[in-house]
Image 1 (cartoon, rainbow, N blue to C red):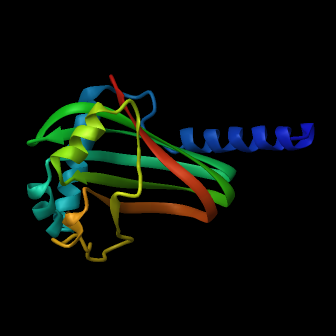
Image 2 (cartoon, rainbow, N blue to C red):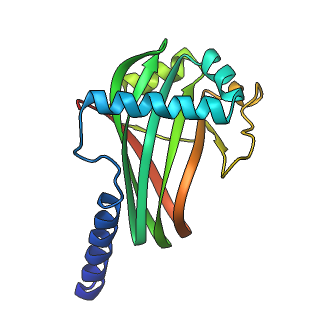
Length: 186
């Protein structure tokens, strides 16, 4: 990598980090009480807007709620959010989600997502891992403004069901990206 391309890469990464931090995603703000309040509000909104997700939650062994993920990118992008894992309706752990991407992209967006762990094995693997990366065993259910989420019994056959909702902002592009969840102490 030449000095010019390294410099451009560094500047793009710095711009993405600045945009992400400036979007009010709760980095450095509050502790467990703040996260719990955001998680509860997110679940209330999810169940009120998409009632069929309550049935999915009733069948799940655990639910990871990420109330706000903020992403931004200009060539190089990143995203961050914090949330909580609930088992039996009780918070058992707190997690951060960090995301990186590289490719043709520009913009910023925010959204919420909830991971429903449909099997004990999936939940156990998540809790035992030292940083869990979203993989191919996840069934994604995405809603963009008022559509009915398609999270019925056919989707609940997957070990993990991810529901993504409440999207705001504009983020265009084709990227290679990944997301990693890490246990935190707020």
